[in-house]
Image (cartoon, rainbow, N blue to C red; front, side, top):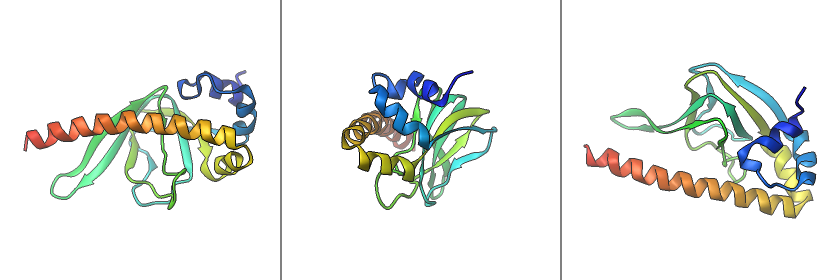
Length: 152
C-alpha cells in the first residue's frame, strides 16, 4: 500500500524536494476524488486548499460577461492546482471543475502555511515551485486570450 508521503514524493510538482519536507507536508495532506462536473473550487470563495492532480482532468473556468464561463486551461495528472491559499486574502480567482473523474492530493492551505512559518526553507522552496507553475500558466493564459480576442 502506498503512503501519502510516497505519493507526494512521486508527484512531478515535488520532484527533487528535500525528504524532510515531505514528513512535514504529509500531515496536511489527504486523498480526494471528484466526479465529472463537480467543482473543486469556486471563484470568490475562501481558498484553503492546494491540489496535486494525480489523474483525471480539471477545467479552469473564468466568467466573461456576455460569453458565460470560458475554459482558460485544462489541467491533468501531474499538475498542481491552486495558489490562492498562499496569498491573502485567500480567495479563489476562478472556478475549477472536474471534466472527468479526478483523483488528487488535497493539501490544507492553513496547515501548509503553518508548516512554512515553522520551516522557512521549506516555505521558500514551496513558494518558488508555485511561482514557477504560475509563470507557465500566465504565459499560456496570455496566448489563449490573444487567440480569443483575435476571433471576436
